[in-house]
Length: 281
Ligand SMILES: [Zn+2]
Image 1 (cartoon, helix red, strand yellow):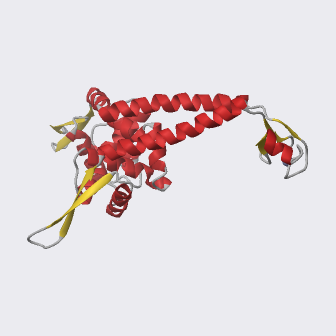
Image 2: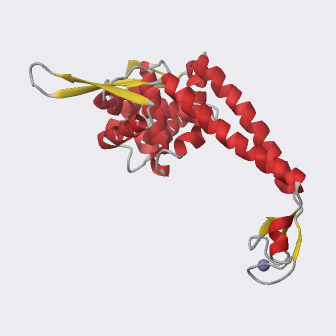
Image 3: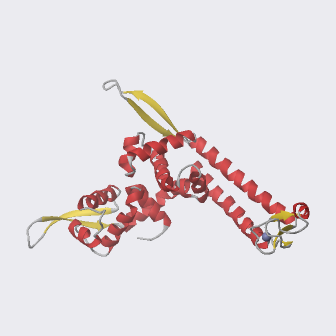
């Protein structure tokens, strides 16, 4: 199994963001020739990885044919054993199919956009909730089942998506229990719109900073650049002395900053093309 980002992200989708490290350990062991659940349990030896969990994770992979199993009789004990195998070819095929979805949630632009919407510890969760919605999973319970994300967190983040108009729900009354059920839907058009807005705003800001740096001379404090940075007019107001420490101001060498901005601008443009292609496919 390749150890790269997309493999990681794909496994997060299959077993849930919190289980991907464990499932990687399982696959590594299967690759090294370990075959039974008991042996996996002994060799991995992780507090949070019970035999039951190992079985659950193996079966999740099995649903996608990433693992295979067969029953065999142990020649010594005469007991039937389940032997597991890892199918790398199938994993790679699934990862390729996943690359478009990966772009939608993990492209640096979508990442930065989503990062503004949630706390940093919810960032991973909201991404895989979006994917669940894209896959047509409609209720909080079903999303919780699929992603292994706590039900409370699923609910909280669905409402965050709703606040951002990225997801919408319909309320239905169960005729028997009289309880309300909510079915959720991903709003693709809105998502594209919001991401485009976010990208355009950031790109414009970067381009205008670059333009300023190219057309103006800036001055900074000669002792500590953090103290002061201003154009000619601003600096002349202080008679070219730092308003913080009173040392002289010196011309600002903008080369490094300009280089960085140019790199960020072209990266942004490239990434935006990728996400546009993925969403519109
Ligand atoms: Zn200073």
